[in-house]
Amino acid sequence: MGSGPTVAVYGAYGHTGRFVVAELLDRGFVPLLSGRDAEKLEALAAESGLDTRPAAVDDPAALDRALAGAAAVVNCAGPFATTAAPVAEAALRAGIPYVDVAAEIEANADTFAHFADRARARGAVVVPAMAFFGGLGDLLATAAMGDWTAADEVHVAYGLSSWHPTAGTRTAGAVSRQRRDGRRVRFADGRLEYRDDNPPTLEWPFPEPLGTRSVIGEFTMADVVTVPSHLSVPEVRCYMTVEAARDLSAPDTPAPTGADERGRSAQTFLVDVVVRSGDTERRAVARGRDIYAVTAPLAVEAVDRILTGRTRTVGVASAGEIFDAPDFLRALSAHLTLELHA
Image (cartoon, rainbow, N blue to C red; front, side, top):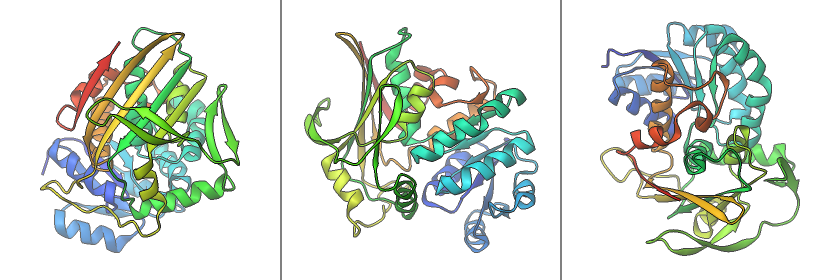
């Protein structure tokens, strides 16, 4: 057991939550297990010996008890349309930083809209989408921007070998589709735009060894909220390899299963971010394994930097705004490889 600060993990028994708990333990923190399902919390506590504090999101008093004595909270419980606001509110009441791993576009936009003024006024830190989708792409885009103060376009291309979605991913996707009435969304001309047409299929020139692959264009992820929240870029486009998109959409694709001693799946990823200004482009590339597992070091590194004062702002801020992006990415060298190209 670590002797470092206590960090509450809401949704600790979920697929990503378990990775976050393990990463906190590896980093010397003391995880405090919380969430809506008391039985699942007790089962996880039996494995880990950690303390549990169940709390429903519609019970503010229970949430306050769950966060009492914690130095920070990481919210891993989706759908975040339901959990983000109540847990963030509880964090503000407790006076502690809030970090979540939300990939839901609308939930992340809501966090910026609803908490920006209050969090800034209190000097509080709220970091949404501190995860593979939203956080990593934003860090890469910020690192690629370098000394540019503005750019014309940011392209975030996801080269996933496969995508076995968790039950939480499927539930969150269903909630998002319902919120946008089945429409798809993209970020163009400086705003979110909802459309009824089908997204295009095109070719994306990934770096070797992946090479040029067919991708679903405008496969919009949380990067369209995080990147333009602090970078002056009117166009943010996301792309997903066709095979991974098919896995996600197929109802019979199984959930991910562990394939190594850390419980990571065999899935590999390459995130290729291209920033364009006029005829000039800059590129940042990250390679790694298991999009759910890599979310844990992203979130825990964020917590560590917040608690040790290595931040650039307060209020609601994305990863690229609040942290030194190149330094943050280099700190993850045990979990992913990074390339920056002018």
